[in-house]
Amino acid sequence: MKKLCALFIAVIIAATNIVSYSYEDTSVNLLVNGNKVSFLFAPVIRDGVTYVDVKTLSAKLGLSYKSYDAPNSIVISNSRVSMCIIPGESIATVADLTGKSDNEFFYKFLTAAPIYIGKHLAVAARDISSVFGYALTHNKETNTVYFGYAPQMISDATRENIHQRAYYFQNQEEFSLPSYGSGYCWACSYAMLLTNITGTRITPSDVAAINLTKGTSGAYCYHNEIVSAFNVKFVSALSLDSPYYAGRADASGGTYINNPYKDDSVVRAALKEALDMHPAGIMVRYADFPHTMLAVAYEGDIILFNDPAPSGSGTYSNTGHYQGVPFSETCVAKKGFSLSDVTFIQAISY
Image (cartoon, rainbow, N blue to C red; front, side):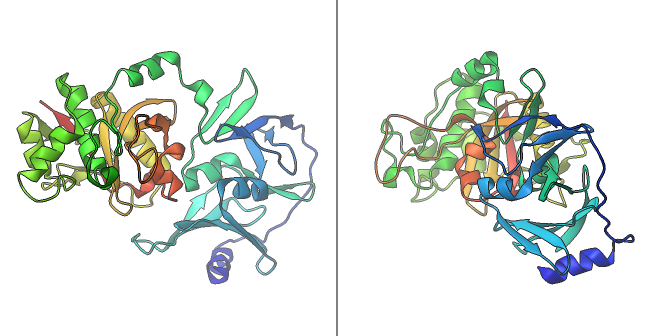
């Protein structure tokens, strides 16, 4: 990590100089995933940029935070990505820690250079949110910035629309899937989307039955056989001339997202485009977890998901916990993955 920061400094032309100026800051409330946080200093808006105490924010998000005297730098990271920043510099180094990216690291131009407010390092909240995959929303009426999700900013109309859609989860007692639904996220996601499209109630058990005709596990999804059984077909989730379109997979009918630098904002924009084209929902596949869930709606930059993750372990349940939730509340996010870790997305139509 120190070597990476040293390399970063080598490409910076001008030496870092921290100069104190007099600014008129506007105090702002900042909530992280819906919860108010006690920061070392209150977040402020300066020249249209929301600055936040990066050390406290990192702790709240479960990120590792390390400071280095030589070179003068801060590194924040999780198991997937690290971000090396230098006070006063408008470029950061973002490194892939999984070894799966074509690029070991890349340079990211920041919204604003990190600054000191008093003795505390402040970073533009948008720069942290974009690297680590959190939505950022500013409610000017209440002078509140929401880092992550803002439940009160989702309209009643959107929530009503979501609750009118099918929602199934893996350990749902009604279906009593084997092993409390372990591995049946595919079946649940297909069942939700097929129900939304056909207008006929199709259950995870119905989908599992198709899989069982091809093998010994109802949880293993035979994509083409499933859509054929219900008289629908795979279609591209994105327009072929979309900047986010990166091709299709024959075996799964999936659409790949053009996102070489694993930017969450790119996936967020792609999902919004996909939902505009296919309002019944988009299946979102994470192969590395592995898990599948259904994107069902969005407002602003907040994508909402029907996540079929079980509501408990080792038991069946009558109540699901993940209907219409923002990404930060999905089981994928709770396992440390981000939007940009998506493998492909799937759309179905007649």
